[in-house]
Length: 109
Length: 262
Image 1 (cartoon, each protein chain N blue to C red):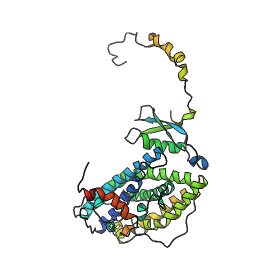
Image 2 (image 1 turned 45 degrees about the vertical axis):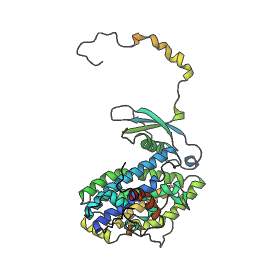
Image 3 (image 1 turned 90 degrees about the vertical axis):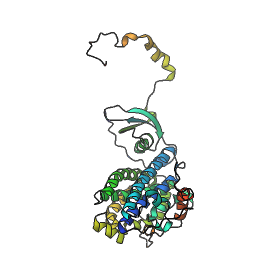
């Protein structure tokens, strides 16, 4: 998947006054791997967020591609719902594919 | 204090030194922002650019020393020359703001104007007959392209931003514009470089540079200042009053502890 947005530079007051919005940064370390969340930063617009992510998170050759998304665009599960959402999975070992007999020639499943 | 070196470079060495010193002094100015930028993210961005420019300066100083042939290395050229032997452009040595105040508007405008110019030089130098210089240029062009883009975006955001940011960008433009003449003012050093195939006479860069900055200024709603009769000449060793203090700070360690390393 590839984001299709071509970022524009923001103008007018939005770019320079008040608190800059927070962005989440995802970096792909090399072709074929997925983008991994690596942190967040403040930036006035999407283009600046990509540039600053480049300067903050890829200065030691960590990346070949960057995604940024405004933090307030992410909907997150509520930490208070952790018991209900995730604890019931603890005793469902049969959901792991570990009960099949594999032929010897398949080494790395 | 360690004795200064005296260098009387030939035209080719002088041509490379002008670029090397511009990168070095510009890098030093940017390094002064470290820990002081308006936001943490931009602090890192400016420091990254300072380090890119320092890397370019090191490669060019080494090359200038080789072309000159007196055996000076990058450290001697950076730390042991006196003010009159530095040949950076004036725009690189101006302080980071005006009236003693650090100013982000002035800094990003200088970064844009100079990196737009530097990008053109590197693109030309990539086909220099001096293959080492061509290799340095090939690498530096990628860095300059990012510096230019990052700075141009800031010029647009601040120029077409709030009343305060627009006012400060206009003041910065008025301050630095007269020194841009020097970036395209060819002399015998340029003519020698152009005829030997070392690199372009700086005057040939003017048209492309002006088209680039004018397009960005239009988007930033910044008006070009009128033509000025002012001529700066730091690239011929005649510096502003700011250069002495810059060198005192930059050179003090090597002057006090010769060959000091860590």
